Amino acid sequence: MPASANALRWTGQPGHYEVYYVTLTEPSTGVGLWIRYTMVAPKPGGDPATCSLWFLAMDPRPGASTPVGRKASFGIDQLSAQPDPFELRIGEAVLSDAGMSGRFEDVAWELSWTPAPRAYESVHPMLQRLGAAQTVLVLPHADVSIDGHVTIGEERIEVAGVRGGQAHLWGSKHARAWAWVHCNDFVDHQGQPVPDTFIDGVSVVVSRLGREVGPSTPVVARIWGHDFLSTSPPRILRNRSEFELSGWRFEARDHRYRLVGRVEAQPHQLAGVTYHDPDGELAYCYNSEIASLHLEVYDRARSGGTEPTATLVSSGRAHFEYAQRTPVSRVELLTR
View 1 (cartoon, rainbow, N blue to C red):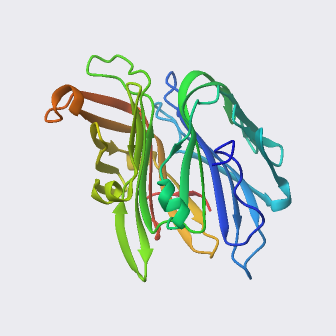
View 2: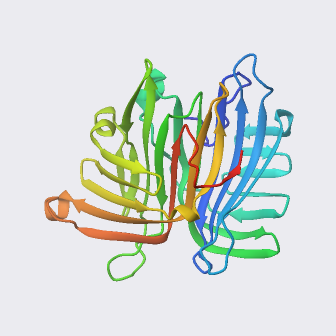
């Protein structure tokens, strides 16, 4: 892996897409944020390559409007990057290993964090070397404390010590369908914050030789300071997973822990967006940054793994996405 897990993988070739995003939920307002920097280089004969800025917000406060969705697209000449120290620019917006800033239309962001000590890889290195994955996901900063502010219309929201995560993915094509969750804001059964803990999981159905295969379900996490990696080829096939528009149930294991999760998202709090594959096909994605996650932790080292060691809960502060290849009629598409 390059010096920075964020280093841009695109070298000018057609048939490639790349995405960077930050997710967080500001606790005093409950507002969830999803800020993305993306690029798409279509296959030969397609449209010119483009880059885009995305800003989505979900507000659970009484009287709040439906989710906010903004997207601004530019010619690829507006994208520039350097690997070490990492910096990516789209127009006047900047992303580095220590923060991000930008503005367009009626939204703006100025956020900073201390870089995480290590990155997490959802796609096993062996599968990456074999080129078996059409999309690779890494978490350069999976669990960081974020400071700064965002502006949505006339409201400025202060962000002070909010747990969040930053991810980077790239590839040639999105999956046929998937569910994803990220959460680093849990409380225990006594309502106390759970330190040094996060989870990031994805479950994908892909097309192989003309038929749909899966789901494959890699999950990475940190549980009370202990890394959890359930990403080997046998594990991702054995991990249990059932997902739909409003939630996801999954089970994942590594050598020490078994994690059993239940994600719930309210349909009216989902933001619908479209992703463009390099071959021109669309994926329809429905995202909530104010979902809830109930996570049972089974620890073989403490209870033999037969009874839950702990139940961790995140109410309205989990980040969830569901996607498929056809639109869902009852959820509005905010960006296209």
